[in-house]
Image 1 (cartoon, rainbow, N blue to C red):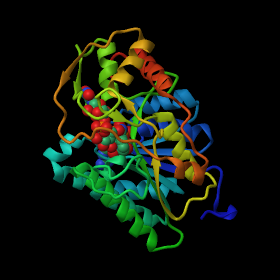
Image 2 (cartoon, rainbow, N blue to C red; image 1 turned 120 degrees about the vertical axis):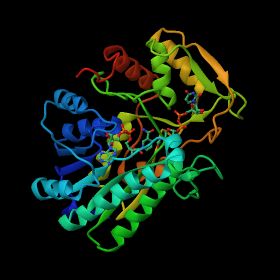
Image 3 (cartoon, rainbow, N blue to C red; image 1 turned 90 degrees about the vertical axis):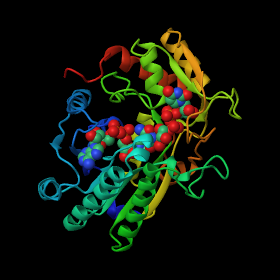
Image 4 (cartoon, rainbow, N blue to C red; image 1 turned 30 degrees about the vertical axis):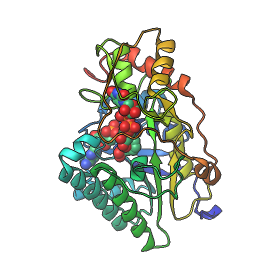
Length: 347
Ligand code: NAD
Ligand code: WQD
């Protein structure tokens, strides 16, 4: 547990994958509360323009190196010069379908990259890591909502990389009492910063529901395919726990503040409630004023009917709780899309 002497208000924080969707939003909140930020990102799915926008939103500087976290020399240089006191580790690949088609790439990047990062941290005696895990580690629900004690049984290579990294971090903390590892299991991050300056910009056809809905609304997609309407949910469509990306970003701030976290801690970060596809579509139509044309297709392989978080441990341990509802999520998503019809392209 953190004691008063261990806790510093302003820290030097290395953010891996900080040019990505969740990382860029977390950088805004880190800078807003006065932390110093260094981003390392190989831009395979991130945007340097997003970092420029982060500087604009916060009117604060941040440093950036375009590098792969598997590049030990690049990491050593960062640790030797910036001397981070904590690392928030977002860098990794996250497409479930791609992980099934190309598992070795996911093990190499996600697991290999995390080992490379932890090796550099050990060498530099940087003892605090916060890791982006996923509710995917739970697999088929034995009960709902998922709490952190729920059995973990991921059913795809992506989820298996996340669980492996959780265990690697746990073992890493056991070596030295000064080491701290906090695992955040994200549910379904959605939304955008309320400025409309940064948001989610998936490359190619969106895999996820929210960006797809938004691209139908802004005319980039002709209609939404709804995968299955025969699930045992309120209206037969899939139900998920959608968490606003700013609420998610603030959870990371909580891990760096004085809190009651143990040296190794696993926390669910979700809204604690579920929303069906049709409910989300209906709210988005209300907010955007645009009808979302939809067609029903058969269920998507691997999809679960419904799941959502029990987020009470995060609330108890670090006084964090989700504040932004589905209406706010849709408003902020729509604003990002209206102001950036081609995302960060052309920047
Ligand atoms: P993202 O793809 O927008 O961000 C990941 C960033 O990491 C990108 O900017 C990418 O360029 C960078 N990156 C990837 N591999 C790298 C490497 N080897 N070296 C350096 N940089 C690298 O994804 P996101 O949605 O912001 O997710 C961030 C993290 O949260 C990921 O680890 C993801 O698995 C996890 N997560 C995401 C979701 C979600 O639905 N978005 C849910 C649960 C967990
Ligand atoms: C949500 C619901 C679909 C798209 C995924 C990953 C998970 C995590 C979050 C990384 C489901 C339905 C979707 C569409 C649809 N990512 N849907 N039409 O599958 O809960 O989670 O993203 O960690 O690992 O698995 O999110 O947004 O893909 O789907 O009907 O075009 O929307 O069936 O019910 P999911 P999603």
